[in-house]
Length: 196
Figure 1 (cartoon, rainbow, N blue to C red):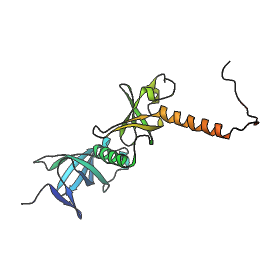
Figure 2 (figure 1 turned 45 degrees about the vertical axis):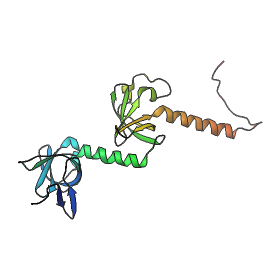
Figure 3 (figure 1 turned 180 degrees about the horizontal axis):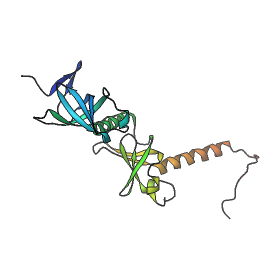
């Protein structure tokens, strides 16, 4: 009897247990669905919404997918490309980023207490960390690309909190230091009256 938990796809042995990330190839397009061939007569279906640019996907395109469930009779397996992307991106961020590091991403939506920002994985930007001054309507930020720094990484919960405010504060501090370092007695500088 063959061990179905390990299937040979091309030259490599793929792990076919739920939770594994496996390689597949788009074998056909049916309406709004892409049929993905996973090796050894196994197929899965991906909706158009699983791709950022579904129109660019063609037959033969290679994809990495998360194997969610191996269903019996139909021979279809339950797969997700978005979830695989998230896991791959999360692992890449864990390897390359630490607390205090700069990141950039797009604000995707407003959630309780702040905003969700996509930096390859969804991360949380608290409302208090959006700007130095308390921002008015934070939903105005949806769709914008922002730069921020990582405040906190919770590996177990796969949760990252970022701050745009802290980045601005750091940049201001750097500029202030540069200005102070460049000042000499006797120099003439232009200034603006800020307070009386």
